[in-house]
Length: 183
Image 1: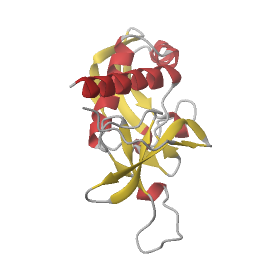
Image 2: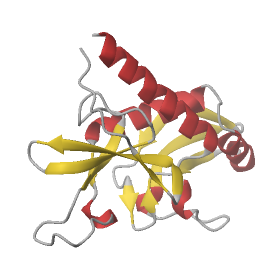
Image 3: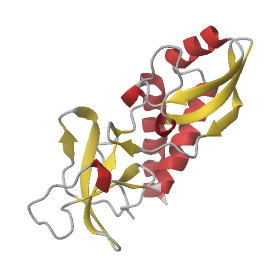
Image 4: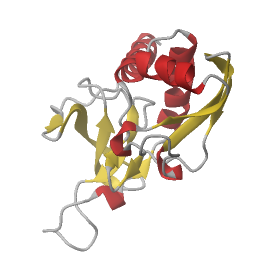
């Protein structure tokens, strides 16, 4: 049985890969579920939901919710790390393959693309998704270590992955929804 909501998603004019689905959470009330999928989540806290933004800010009916009101979804974080590690294993992203070729040896940070670090610099800890060991210019995906300080949403916006990893994440999210809808 599907628990989908029938409301149309709202697309983000500045990020065409993001969609806001109106849902209701028991502890928060009316919120927008932020997702990379146009398909509504089967349940409000589905792993396809990055997190939630309140439909309006508390106590101020005319104030809009902002990025500082974003609430992370731990289920999304788990599937994101699984998708990125799988994407690195399957070599789906040329940016990270080329980064490993340049590094040759050592730990490589997998960082968010919303605020790229300067060439040869380490990015802001909020933007480092994970680290992975590179040996002989090859990524060793089994050494993937999620960064606990990574934030799904910062003042620079929600998560922004490189093209190959973003596609892998969307495929994981879609598969998760299909699995949910068949159970």
